[in-house]
Length: 71
Length: 553
Image 1: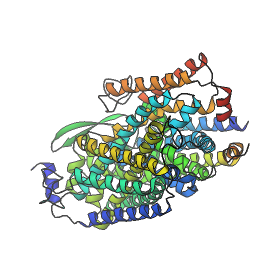
Image 2: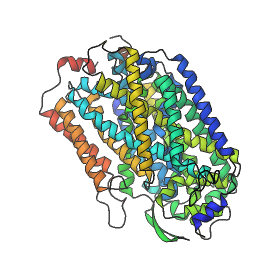
Image 3: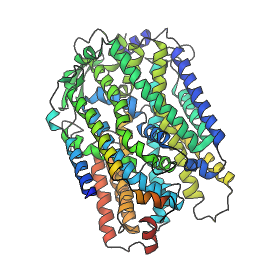
């Protein structure tokens, strides 16, 4: 279940990366950041939040123990 | 007078303060890295993987610094100047998602297996996973040949940065025709950069590289932000700077920009075609197979050290790339007619040139002519060098490591060579590689756009990621499948590389009007590698039970 949720969110993020709706948009956010850049800067933050959730909820504890010498 | 000569005239009485700042930075770097050598335990394991002692922050800084290369500051600014706002989405935000995926899915698992079984190189891992010594001999030349262009990017990148930064400083010592009159010559820049990196790698191996990378990464992150602030100030503030961006660069729509330069009119392809934007997402997969990154992963103290790297990597990319992309976009103001008054004549002349090599000089030219404070200009140039050198050291070290462990020590009885002898062999090979890189960089220093060459290197590694991913997650991946995968990737990559004229920008099925509106070759190479692995593995002998137990806990 956990893996399915992670894969789904990852795929959604990969699709959102294409942001075709911003392709021809030349407006400036906050008066100086082009919207195509502002969107992808926010996307970077979203990616960090996503990976923080993965680390928090899907950390491979068993693999870590095995690597340190336990079974 | 030609525009280039007028640029040279403007650069005549130039302060040497930037060069003094750069020398101080190099001295500090050397001092720090040599100090880390005091912790060197004298063992080969310590030289190659710092005895698995690197904590979370240093791991983040060394992995991030190694991944970014000259691309981070110089390439991002240049590409944004060339193609527009789509540069960030094309190269940076996708990397935030996919690099972190590679660290979590590949790095963490590889670290665990290597820690458990004592591997120090990628090839050792693949040889054991696929029960094949020959696979190592097939992979070795592939990895070395792909790392060499990557190394060249760094050294040639340093010429592109230091040339304009020191132009006019020594007109009597280094006379030259054109804008680089009086600049430090490439042979001297390369000698210093390679010499500094070689010295600290020699002294402390991977621990020195990790310490140096941490320092370098902090420097280039800070200097990127400082350059952003000062350039925006020189252009009248962020809002004024953004208002004068050339309109075609604010969107991703593919278009042709007609530039009327003093040297004659020319056309520049701007914007990002959608299919290229989509298939470019395969490029960041390269971090899954970079041998130097593999070695950095193995320096981690524990699996938990990876947590910060996985989470903070996309943010670090953002901190470096957003300011640099904006600087590149602001520089397109020189294309507006008439150019905004804030742009000094030399910038307009150099940026309005049809020469694509000029694209790599955007940041250093803008810094030099727009930030009039030589102290700050020197600090920003040092930041750019930091980004370049933080990758060079890891690449030199990893080539020495794989040569020693996978070629010299492979098949030799344990104990044949003492630890001192092993470290000596690694150091000797590193010297040879540094020398080869230095010579090649001087021969190829005039390559049109050095960053296109980087994409070819990344493409090869990205396509090979299908090998490491199946090795880690599919018990059914076989030795024959691995050979098929590497061969399919190597042949297809070489084919496209040749079609591209040995390193130019190239996409498959592109239109007659543009060279970049087709599929990125990496997507096809990756698919061919993956399909070859799956099909061949389905019909060939499976790995032994022992191997399955060893690699799938």
